[in-house]
Image 1 (cartoon, rainbow, N blue to C red):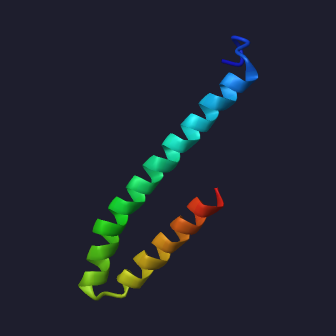
Image 2 (cartoon, rainbow, N blue to C red):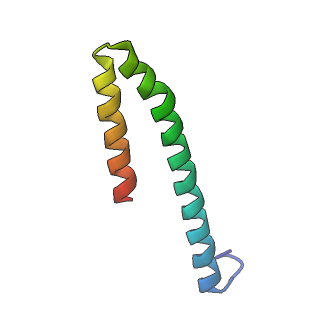
Length: 66
């Protein structure tokens, strides 16, 4: 779009739409991870459950900062 000299505001609109789509995908992926990977690890009672919760918490923090 830049190379085609598209109006800057139109490019920014596309960037915003792409960002929102990626955020939506990230939330969906995180939800799936929590429902499956983290839940299984916690249910197993193994110490890795705590690791999975910490890992998911760090991922959520990264999403909030972005």
